[in-house]
Image (cartoon, rainbow, N blue to C red; front, side):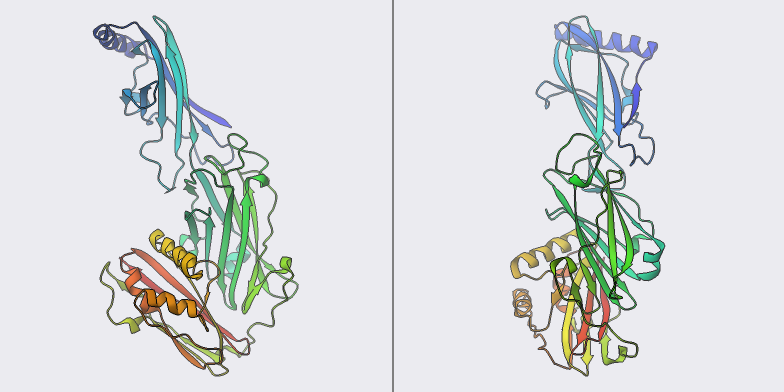
Length: 427
């Protein structure tokens, strides 16, 4: 760990503070003492992106109850070298300027310290500000970038509080700083990527037990100052199918490597650790014409002004050999949309976010659309054509600013697949 520390000392400022605070003390009619305040940050050694100075940190002095404010300063640099206070106990607080948000682009530090002021005694107190959020970083190797055309990586803390990285964030996305709150024992990493042959997904769980070093304390829960670095690389299984390997370094240490535990290939999910059977062959050259997937152009509309023509969102599927499966997953830059989809998963068993929803023969999907006041028919296995009405989501989306994507994978009775996506932006 590295301490970044500033102590204030200036003879002129001390003299000025003495005059001002002596007047305060006499008017209060109490015994008094002097307080010198230092502020420092405790930085995670391997996640530190730069020097975090404390000169702009606001400082507040409270009475012993921690809520009654005695004095406050906009910045450390604006504080006098000595502060004259009535004798008694105090709570000192300093933090990064502003309020810590759920997701930030920089670390947020905060610290408190207790101090006792005695009559005619100068007390030195140091506030150590510790990082209050958790950093999350992803890395892609060149093979990964060469293989995948699009991807979504979601970190889920199990409390409806997720962060995501997509190909739209670039090949070297910036580190995010995540306020996890309390009681998070594990993080679930969900990967979904699209290449020229189809879709690959992987899933894994990360825990603090995989770390060999912690930022502060030995709690089993993730906490402020923890750092999670996850690396993604394509792996070719012995069957010839491409999967994804996930390895994780936690807290910037050489933590235990975590292998991918779920493999999904073009025509289904394959989980070797659970004894599943290997999937059959994926799409063969020349089979692309066996299925057609007609998609609408990207759709953009203003908030609360959704198109009245719902057919603008129709996806048309035609399969001369018959439709076997139509899987639909959704992603969104709107947290409200993600929360709504999670509620749909809990209420109707329709997991649009992770596993995806099978449309063929799905009566639960019919009931969900009925709850939106929409009628929906779903195809039966073997049907040669079907229109999936993404436009039925317009009324739900029109109050949620952001970009919403619906990924579709159609499979026919012979295992041929075709995939695509519908993009809807509300601004």
